[in-house]
Amino acid sequence: MLNLNKKSLKVFAAAVIMILCTGLLAYANEGGHVDVGDQLPIWSVIPFVGMLLSIAIFPLVKPEWWEHNMLKVAIFWALIFLIPFGIAFGGHVLAFYILETVLLDYLPFIVLLFGLFVAAGGIVLKGSIAGTTKTNLVMLLIGTALASWIGTTGAAMLMIRPIIRANAWREKKAHTIIFFIFMVANIGGCLTPVGDPPLFLGFLRNVPFFWTLRLFPLMILNIAILSVLYFIIDSRNMKKDIANGRKPDMDPEKKEIIRIEGAHNFIFIIMVVGAVILNGVVTKFDFFMDQATHELHGIDIMGVVMPYNSIMQMCIILIAAFLSMKTTKKQTREDNSFTFAPIEEVAKLFIGIFLTMIPALALLKTHGASLGIEEPWQFFWMTGALSSFLDNAPTYLVFLTTAGAMGATSGVATTVGTVASINLLAVSAGAVFMGANTYIGNAPNFMVKSIAEENKIKMPSFFGYMAWSLAILEPIFLIDMFIWFW
Image 1: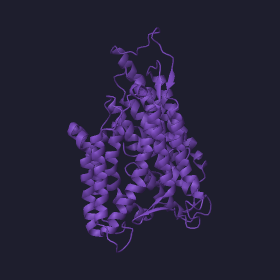
Image 2 (image 1 turned 180 degrees about the horizontal axis):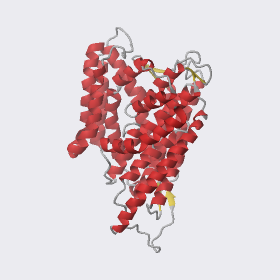
Image 3 (image 1 turned 90 degrees about the vertical axis):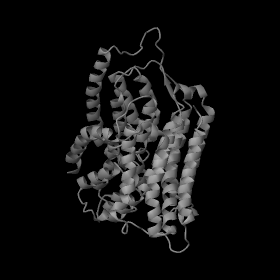
Image 4 (image 1 turned 45 degrees about the horizontal axis):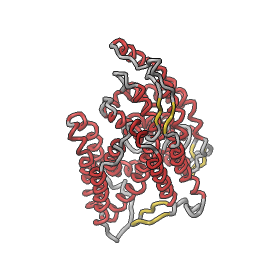
């Protein structure tokens, strides 16, 4: 099925319009935008917690119901927050926060995911590839190497389907997808601002483009440990599969040469990545940003300025997606088992996540500097822990700003102050690495899970996945802390 489900699309569009109208109808001309972090009670994060628990519990207890009603649940929790918020702070503030979240955060997020999902979905790796332990590990490492240069989302969307097809003969394969999320969708993206959104925000605030290459030793250590662990786990599982009579279809007479179909879609992936880079580069020009105040120029929508550079980025990405759909053979996408179901699921759930996240991020923005964080290991763990559940990009920005306010006399000169190099390293590593702790910690995590489940791979539940991350990743992060940040 290559066309978007029209009913789902209409329902989703209606939901977004309803949320926007909730703010617009309540809009009042008096007053203006205010920071609400110092006025919100801690229990205002309950709808966000409810949203997370819904994602964790409903797929286990009512899977079919959840599949058809996840958008309704997302809108329910969003309104549980938005209605009292509007009553307490007024229509103007409500409208501002809804528009700011939808236009500045959610829309660029989903457009970027959509562009990479469509372009990568038109590339098919064909030929005889058996999902043995060695082959799987090589593909994981290739994806990891690509992640810093085409983004964790780009690398994940490019490599997930070949890995799924290669392991079709295996019974136990969820662990391969889990390590894929660890390595390709998160840790591999730490070397450049293109790799992961938090690092791109740092680049926009004058962190030099190649400064993040300093994370290379950390990445090598983490990937080396994960590779050894994966080799041990997958070797045992493969032996069990073979003992149970499973084996890949590797008849020499049927063996096919490995080849790529739809390779022209690499051009569109480059367009998407180029649009992200261009987004940051053009801010050096006065048309896009006031060089004195660092305020972005754009279209003012009821007090929310939608930056020209962000609009440009989204336009380029949507053009790339359109060209990819028009120039790729239908058969190629069918061979890739491409449907829009995974991106639909992400779009439905994350509208609820982004909106219910508003109070959590507001509280963090207001109180982040008063958390008593001074040591590098504290920056590492606090940034990482919150990035596991909140959007890791704004979380990174909060702690970057906190570090910039500490009065460092040497380090990296950013627009938020001079940041000690070790603290910047800790914030960067925490935001990127610990995005792997949960399905919602980084954009591609949930997408990879959805694609795997669409291909009949039984993935762990929300808490089941966290059991994997706690058992495997947290000891590695402790090693990181004692070597680099203690």
